[in-house]
Amino acid sequence: MNCISVTCNTIRLIMLETKELTFSYNKHTQFSFPELRCNSSETLLITGNSGKGKTTLLHLLAGLLRPENGKIAVDETDIAQLSEKKLDQFRGKNIGLILQQSHFIASLSVLENVVLASWLATGKEAVQKAEKLLDELDLVNQKHKFPSQLSIGQQQRVSIARALINEPKLLLADEPTSSLDDENAMVVANLLQKLSKEYKAALVIVTHDKRLKDKFPNQLNLN
Image 1 (cartoon, rainbow, N blue to C red):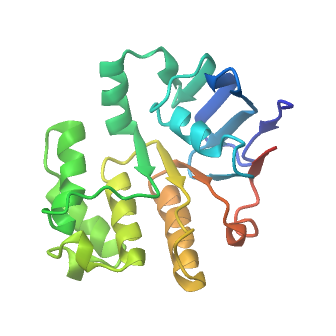
Image 2 (image 1 turned 135 degrees about the vertical axis):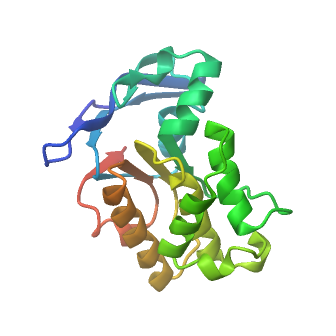
């Protein structure tokens, strides 16, 4: 794989940068990723066919996997060099994750699931901030419901609220629109873009969804 650099055009703070990033599951499945860079308030779309390492790259950026070699700088901190304990702490405070499977706690309400994310990262329950986010995402009337009582589109918006509760520097989304119809896909895409700008977070979206390619011109294709 050729190494290319993808850079957001507007001069802003660099929130994410990688260099010489490699990872392998075994000798038959090895990846050498292009260098990438994305600034605060901007969006990078990562595309590519199955098996090209999109989800692996996302997990590396989130610190869920460790690279064999290379640098992953989030707000100038190389997360590849952090101990497991410090990485967990850094991730909780600086990286917001929106995964394909939401992994809500079924016995907790929508509001409690969002508040829990703040408590796990900071030891404090940011109830007012959680309610503000839910209101902004048009979910405040759903806050006392259980996640199972919501539509798929509503659950995806709860995932966004949970990812933003700690005002992360980096927001990572794995196929955030793949299970949504056209209308809800654009709602979620617009919300992600709007909120990443509001919170000055770099937004990285990994997707197969062709509907997003026209919306986000800054793209990296893994081939």
